[in-house]
Image 1 (cartoon, rainbow, N blue to C red):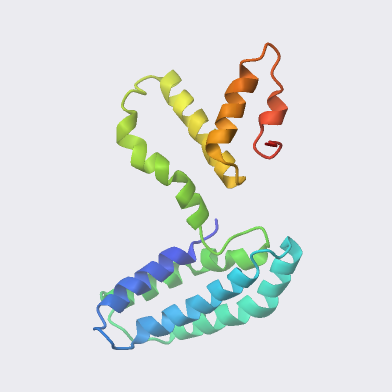
Image 2 (cartoon, rainbow, N blue to C red; image 1 turned 90 degrees about the vertical axis):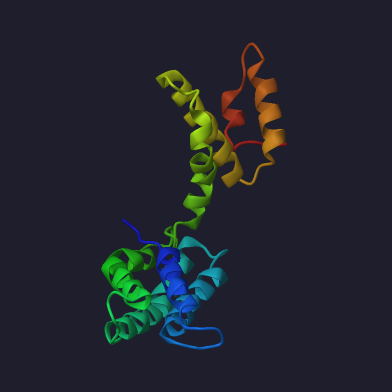
Length: 183
């Protein structure tokens, strides 16, 4: 399991709101430390898996060590928003740092959450899927759509081409896979 630094960051954002306007506090310190991790990930976005792993070993690990040391030395009320943010982050720590072990992994699961957002929003609209076939059809269609989006395709063009190809007596299904698709 890999943790999500966006969730940890969000908890510190909630704590920051209670610091008062214009005031800098411990939540700001945590957010600044987390932001350094995100800045590194931003620079590594186009790096190879191997480069990402290497940079994380040399650059992210010290930042994570610094954040961990800071988290474990804070004296705060556990039930306060800041206390809850620190407690959450420490309880998730082994999962949160797992991304540095593999260049394929992400610092957060924002991409996955964005991909399923339309499913979550549409949940109430799918009451028609009151049988397994309808549910299977919806799941299949959304899987195809999200995979096409993840591969950077223009969805309308992709679906039109799919419909035209599938109407043929012997469609070339392999050419319709999003990673094989050409305009």
